[in-house]
Length: 167
Image (cartoon, rainbow, N blue to C red; front, top):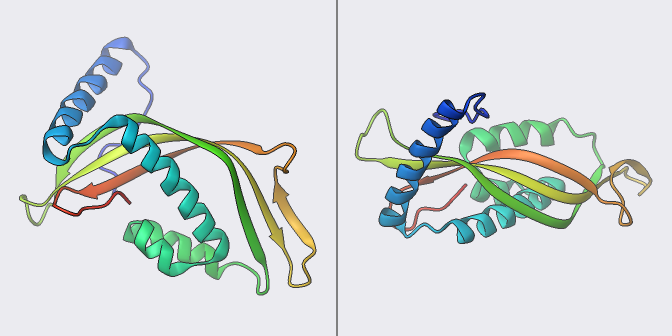
């Protein structure tokens, strides 16, 4: 569950408050896990590509490793709804991530179990194709010559323990 949904602030005062909260969370993340913005942005872009490829290939094992349980449930439902025999492909032509918000929280059942949520804007250029069982193109977005420009907002989460991963 996202603890504090990102909403662009309508006034400079509310924007300032959100910036202050994220800055404090950033400093705490730097101390706790050695968080750096450039490394995180690279990781978020790679994760976006890996999740896209795993979803296109219907690779539930990879999706389970890369996503949170609630996200995985949504993706499994989408995979189940696919017509039999369809093959999907995902080709990325560049992904950039930017951080919009950082929040720290704790489990409601165990206050010592802390986690971080980072809201990212993902800007990607991609080609997504769907082919039927005979290999005929039945749907697509973008092309090799003109990739589709996509902007998406993702919330990445990590438990703040040794060996925790962003999902």
